[in-house]
Structure formats: structure tokens, C-alpha cells
Image 1 (cartoon, rainbow, N blue to C red):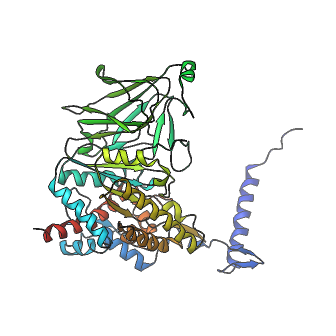
Image 2 (tube, rainbow, N blue to C red):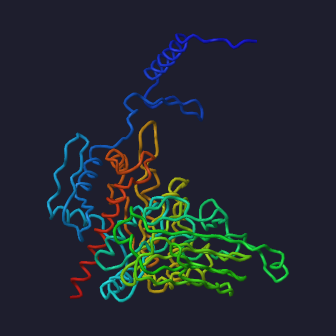
Image 3 (cartoon, rainbow, N blue to C red):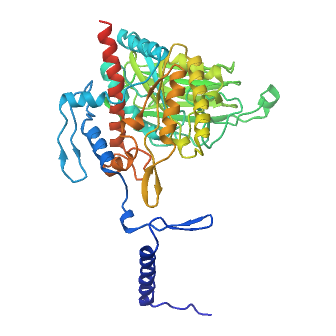
Length: 495
């Protein structure tokens, strides 16, 4: 049987007929739609085919916020960046006093315990002795060093420090702060999202680890005799796309644990061997340290052994100042710290002299909340994570950044997820009760239905969830303004 040919004119007529009947349907159906039993039949009306929805009040609020944001690398809150309005005009930068007023709009929230920890962190910053670390955990909103990179450069420009801090053993998405390649026999294990899990739960402080052989339940001499020798490598280089200070570092550490059989490590800078050593085989958390009088442009770590250790990450640092690490956990709701073996979490945090932990989560939970009870349950889970972190690094400051505004599509228009404001409220309550500081990103970016305006300004992606690179800088500056304001007030009170 031959294939029946369809004339192009028939295709055109068919498409026109479809549009005609859809248009007729749109005119007949009432705006609220029809209900047939449990079914609701609606139709997107012509006026709803716009890519976003936001009322005038929301738009004016967001534009006043954006007009007051200065994302230059100057300290404090002075200055402003011009922002294009929805009419195509360029809004005039806000006056200096207006900028400061805007910066005060959304402040850090804490109780007496949270204030004590925050002020202790400020005191450590001002004393500027040795090297301290800030770990910035978050979901995909901070991926690729977005938000973190900007905050890092601010800290390091003011208080010293070089390098991107902690980086994963094997990275799975693009990072601006460093370059990395590795042999194809590595397997990545994670304590979050969808991925391979470690039976030992020895992920370390980054919530992930990599191995070049499987994780065996038990290793004895008889088993070792039957295993072949495996080799693997990881190559690390600085990135020209990183902020200036992140491109330079002179201290390199490799964090590992669960080494239970002999492993030889050779480190080369280019073709030059700079270290040959054997890893410690007691299974505990350890670090291999390398010191340079320059930034190593091409480091390769070569491993040789029958059973791989858990390589928990590397740290690229300066000798003094502040290290700010981007630890992006795609798909995570933040409930990971109780899934990590405590000794490896605490051991790695102490090795890095962690003085602040920033926890930026909530977005992945918002999209699955069923009701207010579900929100409160999540807030309870999240609070346990804060207690875990505080126990792992006693005296450190925990600072929680709540989720940004996020939009879902309702009848062709974009609106804030219904339970998002309540989730922010409950996360703030749980954080403060646990002795942490809380910063409300949702309110800082404009509150309800702010996201469509950020999308229009090309500060957020068209998924109405994630910031663009430019938008991440705006969000980071808003956070910095709040933190810096508290720091200035503390400094003034302690002169």
C-alpha cells in the first residue's frame, strides 16, 4: 500500500480550522471556566498569554529595590546601579541616603544567642589572625559559584584571603571559580538528591565524596590479594573567569577518609613532581597539605592502590584571611547534615577553621509542600540540621538564607507558590530558635510576585526559580548589605 500524499493547502486549512475553533472556544467559555463534577475546564485567555504577571504595587516595589543595588566591589551600601524600567526608561540611581534606607529594609533576624555568635564572628574578622573559613551551602540557586563568588570577593577584598576555598573531588557541573578534569574511573557519592550513596556515610563537610574503586563492605588481606591495582588522577587549575582573588592561592589541601588499604599519592605541578606519599590507612579523616610561594597553574593528583579512599574534596587557599566555599547541593532541601558521619563532618570543618556556615535552602521543599502541617514538619527537620552544624563546629555562626520568590503558572499567569511565605516564616522561626541568624531573601527581592519582574529584567531565568548570573550578583549584594549593616553597627558599638 502506498503512502497517501497530503497537499500543503490541506495542512494550512487544518491549522486555520484549529485556530478558529480554539478562538471560538475562548470567547464562549466564561473567565472562571466550567465545572463538570470534580473537573474544572478553563482556557487561557488572550490577555493571559503574557509571560508574566505582576501588579503595579509589586512592580514599583521591585524596581525601587533594584534601583538601589550597587554590585560594584566597594564596601558598604553607597552607590547605585541604573535599572531599566518596564517602560524602557532608565531609572535614575537612588540617592545615597535612599540606598542606605533600602539596605535597612530587610535585616538579619536573630535572638540573643544568634547575636552572640554573629558578634563573635565579627570579632574574629576584625582580629584578622590566620585563616578562617565560611562554608556556603545551598541548592542549585548557588550552583556554579553564583552568589558565593560575589560574597567571597567582598570578604577577601576587605579582610584578606585568596582562592575559592573547598572544591569537590570531582565536579559534575561547570564552575567559574576553578577548572578540573579527572580520569573516567571515578564514581561520585552524595548525601543529597538522586545519586550513589556511601554505606559508611563518610562524606565529609561537602556532603559528597569520590572513589576510583567500589566501596567494599569489608576489606581483609585475603580480599586484597585478589584485587587488581587501580590508578586514577584529578587535575586542578585556576580559572580566568573567577573573581580576581579566587584565581590566586598558595595552599592546597586534599581531604580524604576511609583509607583502609595502601594508596600511593603522587602530586605533579606540570611535569614536576612536588610530592610522593602514602595515605594513612586508619580510616579516619585526614588532609594532605601542599605549600607554594606562587599559584600552581596545573596540579595533578595521581592515585595508585587496590582500594580507593573517599576523596572528600580539595581546598585552594591563601595563607591568611577569609576562605568562602561554594557547596552547591543540587536538588537538596538542606536536610543533609544528619546524613553525614559526624566525625567526618566535624573533622573537616575543624581542619578548615570554619567560623561561619551559611545555609541557603528551602526552594526544593516549597514545590512539594502539601499543606501548612507539611511546612512545619520541614521546618522541624531543618532546625535539626542547624543543631547538627552547631555541634560539629561549636562556637561557629550559622546564618540561614531563606528561599527566593518562586513562581508557578496558574491559568497562564505566574504567581508565588501559595505556601512559600508561610515556609519563610516557619524557617525563620526554626532558625532563630536554634541560635542562628536568618535573612529573608524572599522579602529582600520584593516579596509576593517579585519573580516575574526579575525575569523581565533578565535577573532571573524563565523557569521563574533561578537567578541569572547578573541577578545572582543583585541577590548577593542585598545579602551583603544586610550583613555589612550589622557589622558596622557592631564595630561602632565596640570602638
